[in-house]
Image (tube, rainbow, N blue to C red):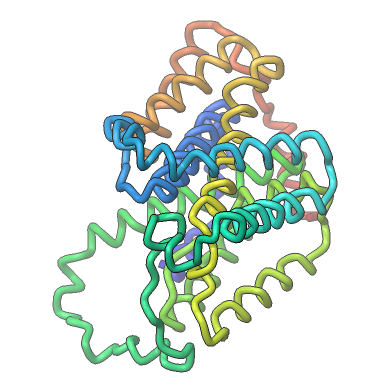
Length: 334
């Protein structure tokens, strides 16, 4: 996967993703917000939900009890972040939620073990020392002869990751309000995936939501990336499982905050920034993604954009050839 992404970047194929209409990307971002919110609710309620048709599971009294603090916490974080634009607001509100949880345990005389039994904290299993992590990376157990039969699956995986990574780059580009070199960024993602694969990790891309919130908080230093890497490393080497002490609504609150931010921005606030036709494309792309999934939903959104444009409606300012040259020149300088 990583090698394929590098090839795509080197042949400058990712540049075509820059032709995606911003209204289609906006619908995708709203969908990502919805997906994060749904994942947060499912995590807090300890139920498996993959679509709107399964939301009835959230109506169970026990589920409502477990997810209520996270929903309130997510709204609180969202309000504070929107009201006070400072880099200390987000970590401070997160810390307040943790303090509130353990103060509640202390006031009610409930132990961590009992909170875990009641579903407030996920059940965890004893994990081996981090030095034994790679004991499970046994290449001699791989059945290589079945690899050719997975060709189409691998191609589909590469296509999905390349598209989703390009959409993540587009989201960051919109927030930064300046052009990014999609091919360079996709090549970076490719190298990261190679390193992850060689060390037994998963595939991945940019966490665009974290990047966007950092930009909004005024963080421009690369030190943030080093701090995240250092904290992650410390978490791995600690002799105990940190997750055994973190309530589910802690993660759920963060996911709800991302949900509220993206959905409000791209389904409500955006109405004042785009033409009526563009807004229709945003809403319809969001709905199409719900029904068709990411790949076909994006394609359907683009088709809708083209149809509305051909009908003569104003779908936004088109980029001329001269402007495209200016964008590419800016990319090269960057």
